[in-house]
Image (cartoon, rainbow, N blue to C red):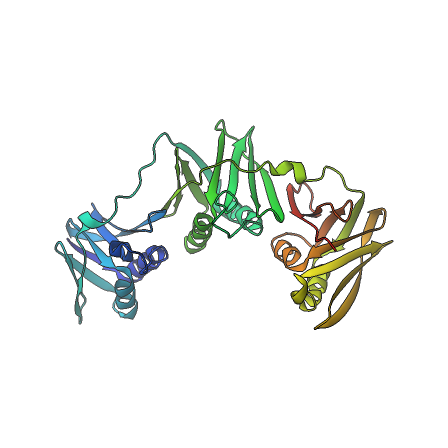
Amino acid sequence: MKVAVKVKYLLKAVNICSRLVSNRSSLEVLGNILIETDKNILKLSSTNLDLAITTKLGAKVEKEGKIAIPARLLGELVNSISEDTLQLIADDTNLTIKGSGIVSRLNGVAASEFPTLPKLANTKSIKFDSASLKNNLEKVLASVSIDESRPVLAGIYFSINNNQLVLAGTDSYRLSEVKSAYQTSESINCIIPVRTVSELLRLISSEDVEGIEIIIGESEISFIVGDSQLISQLTEGKYPDYKKIIPETTTTTIECDKDKLIEAVKVSSVFARESSHGIALKVVKDELTIDAQTSDVGENTIKITVKKTGKDASININAKYITDILSVIDGKTITIGINDKLDPLALSPKIKDANEVHIIMPLRS
């Protein structure tokens, strides 16, 4: 292999691929980035066997070839070089990097030892606005479980049916669902692992593109974002029938300034850390009282003005869960729905045509 590349583009590609590399794996080859040519394109790839990423950059290719190089060393070296253009020259197991005043040689691994990247079968292809998809995924991610011992909950439910996209996430204590119109004849139902979604969000942030293509196969999913492609295994299993816990109506509805509620909950959470982050919400007339107390820390009471419809109500809730949800809800005003103190609490933005709901299970006092 013999190619010439711009340092800034090479460094960006190395950084993208390095996120999947683990030096703790029992397979040493997974600590490497595969570098290969494809006509006048240089491709870099990495994988942890569950996820794989490939990114492309323009290059002047004089000789085709491929090699796997330790990601950490390659990243440190390229990041330290101030030159504009580098020449990469490789045989089966060595990569020489040349600039106008530098010559470095890195020991690598034969490309044949690098795992074969998955190829999707029986695929369906759909396209999205990247900013809109990123925003909706971030809303749902707030409720997804990080406990990988329950793989189905450690993922986002992704469904397209009847021209509607539904994204949902839950850890059984909280739930987020976002719906949006999407015109397609395709019918799709799958679970995307939370690690995959996190990597996708980083990729969207690093690539300045308006659109994203999603390709879904029988057991894998692929995201094409600009010059990069992320491929992941889908989570096997059936997603819980979460819709039955979303209340159709509530006996108490509160409209509240979001920023004031965030401040009140954050202050109260200081006094709730030793009691499972528990705080008490009580609404009487048009006033919401937030109480928190623990014997070791003290107690705190905050009152904020709200607009209430229905009867007075009270409920005990996890302060951290509310804070996480409020951080992803758009708009200045939110709607809170309460039935009984042992029923789920519902939060949603007070925005016209909003199709988003977040559910938090109550704490038992």
